[in-house]
Structures are given as structure tokens and as C-alpha cells.
Image (cartoon, rainbow, N blue to C red; front, top):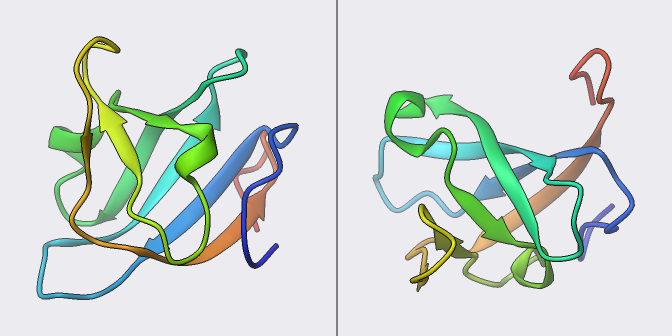
Length: 95
């Protein structure tokens, strides 16, 4: 899965462009709606901060900066573009 996440996928890992930030990937889980994923893990650091943020499904595409929100009311773009999208198993979390 290179260019965009399929909206039917339960879990995906997005890799972000390295610009010196403390997180390089996010694990996203389908929020069981047509609009968003929920951040369930992050690495190598800052999972405590990003966990439970929401990411707009239509913004999860290679080369794009994800649209994120904590409260699902106000949103902003993450500074770091997506470089890779990997489908993961919902049961095991493995790629």
C-alpha cells in the first residue's frame, strides 16, 4: 500500500518525513466511521502525547501532511509529510 490507505483497513502505520522530530511513525486504527483514524501508538518517542489524536482518512496519502485533531472539532495539518503507508493486521498489529 504505497500511495494511500484503504478506508476499509483496520490498522495502518504511517511513516513521516524525518525533519529531526521525536516521532517518525504513527499506528492508526480505524475509528469505525467514514472520516477518521485514531492514533494508537507512535514512535520512537512521544506516544504519550499523540495517542488518541484523530487523523482524517482522506488526508492519509503518501506525500501529504495529515489533517489531525484532538477534539474532532478544530483541526490542523501535521508539519511532516507521509513517506510510507503500511497495512497492519488489527489482531496482531504486524505488517
